[in-house]
Image (cartoon, rainbow, N blue to C red; front, side):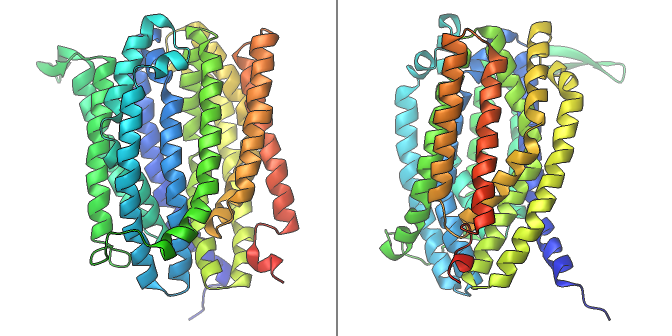
Length: 459
């Protein structure tokens, strides 16, 4: 019986880790599409009210995800070195992090819900609606933190299926409740019969309530999955701060958290400048962001595999496996992003029509989507190299790269284009693409020099 070549075996492992994450993100994006379409049917003002504070959502979620990266790097290396006990201790520290950070973010977001729309320069006519939507969305902040951080912990142990399955349940709950909460009770014809469909008729607030309940369900399920996990369950571990675990986790997490916080704050500033361009620009930007997110799924699915496998190899001190992983991950990633970018370019107008009836919104959104589609392979390279660096615990360089790109290129450029030169959304997305290309150049330099790999630089 012939043995499989090592590269074939490694490819199988990569795909086994990547596809559940891709499917999970596909489900999340599908529901985001459905949410946007359902809210979009209520009018441009409803879409703008929901989308105007979406960047704050990214800010909160990305900060929690960054904290999870610290645990991912630690747990992946511990398991790679065969130290299961240390991995379980780290899982308990993740529980403590969820309790602390979830409580903190609940207090902060709810207390600021009344002023955030004004800070985001949302049009006065829709500020109260945007504020109520934001408040409802952040009531279940503790289960949201559990879902994000515990999902990352499970992926660090190579379990990408549990987060995927949880995501499927969450998304189904969200869709069903959207259907019931957004629209009023109505009658429909089904197989020739008149059927009365129940509905609360809450509109935008119904979409927020549906998401809040779905987040709660996801947090409960993810907590149960972690508690029952055969390798990293924190059962039996003491729930108190453990400096020996937290210190190395925070060394990785803090630069990543600052990176995500800084870039997400940049997204907030970016969105506020776009909101100031008016309802059409805000709606087109919101919908285009939603559409674009589906085409990043291959990239971020592969990033999860890159971080986990690189962390395992680093923990085992396996230099050859580190080199082989990078040689396989990068071509696969670029190939996937070329395909996704081509599809986005071809179908941009069709996808915009799914979410808006406004000809102006469709035309503007399709234009910026086709612009960004060309840059996707370059961004895909950056995603993979950043994932490998997360796996080995090198997060300082990505922090510097992303902050420089966001604030020196995207934000300054967008300010100059929209505020001083009077240009519109197209110029803002041009600055975003320039940001992505700068990241490509910096990560390419880091990869070519080998500074991403501690085992190579130790030679």
